[in-house]
Image 1 (cartoon, helix red, strand yellow):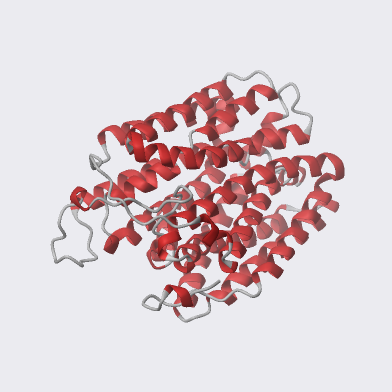
Image 2 (cartoon, helix red, strand yellow):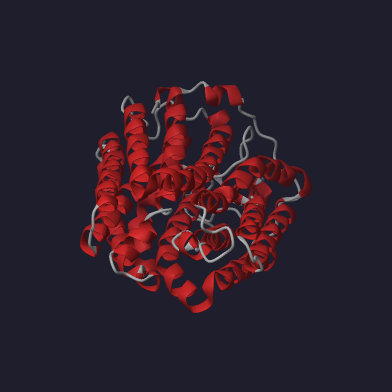
Length: 447
């Protein structure tokens, strides 16, 4: 049921996230495309219909993203509660570090993995990265202390294969269908986050946190099998394409605003879950029933996103929707601040979660698309590399700062700082201009 709703909600991503032609690319490079690796289109050289080979490549590589992201997201809703059972788990600051450390190692190694895939081959690097991810999962499963969990999470993040997977997808698709291929990737990430919120409380009740990490290792091995037997053979040579300069990306005001935004969004996302599970428990909902709140909120938010973001974007109201989504997340933080200081019941907490996911899904869908559309074509890979690095750093910062804030000031202090951070983001984003519609010169597009 969740999958069908998510697909409906994200089916229009091809018109938005689908513009993201370099999702998770290494900084300083653009996708290397080998025309020889793609079957000729059946309806002409400019056909937007995928060939069978392109469909196979897109679906298999999107599934690799999905398996890895599900493994990372599964622990998010339950990590804080379960980590308290380990020696050292009574320190919220250290729990936050263990929760977010994978974002740091992922950010540090994302570019080297992408560059290595250019030299050693995409599939080899992807398999190696997934093996690291599986090893980190098993290390975390065997942990007997919080330090062991921290080491396992760090090793999980070291399997930073996003750049290599995306580069391989670019190798195996034509420009005319690249948007559709990237839409599948974007939809898979959003769907896995939604599934993790629903499945994690059920799974941890059945197998505990160690069993959850074993499951993530199994998902990584499933990804390896997909690489070896599901993904079409990669091209023997990668076509050299112009390389964009990092300085161009760092000097672009619109890109700087979006990079700041993705950092704030994911920092607040992870920091929230240092306190939200405890609020649900305090309201009388045991951890194995938290999905009672998450499932309706996630399902309804997909319907809202599908009915607002895409139609409004087509009508020229992307800026209004974008800023409104930031405002909604700020209001949620204020609401959680009030709830943390009182005795909020499950209904108001459920409504806050619904509003949060409405804003989060809209921003998660629109930001990478806007990056790819406003970036100069020769610097698109560099722009998306910087964007995705800051996304990972935001996850790390959210875990570390969230744990420290809960330890020092409690949940109220955490949500207060999150509210200020989102309001600051709203101020930074306010001067934005929506990207021009396709067909206009790239120089006229600015966020």
